[in-house]
Length: 89
Image (cartoon, rainbow, N blue to C red; front, side):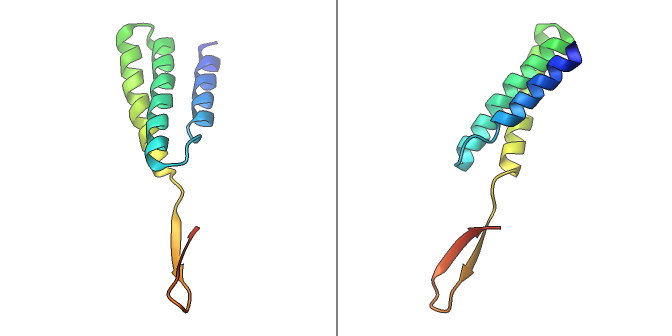
């Protein structure tokens, strides 16, 4: 049962992590969702306050890092008149 709950919390966190558009919003929401998921997993695994806090800290750091790494990238090109065009790569 614990494994199913852990998988559910982790899956929910992954679904909610990419809901924002700006870089700072993505990082903050990734940290919040990761921290909540980490706290839930820490409580399920450890069953005490220390495990919950450690899980929240690890989850928040991981969520922020994943959100920052998954930011959409843009490429730039110029036409013959020097106009700049940005597009997703």
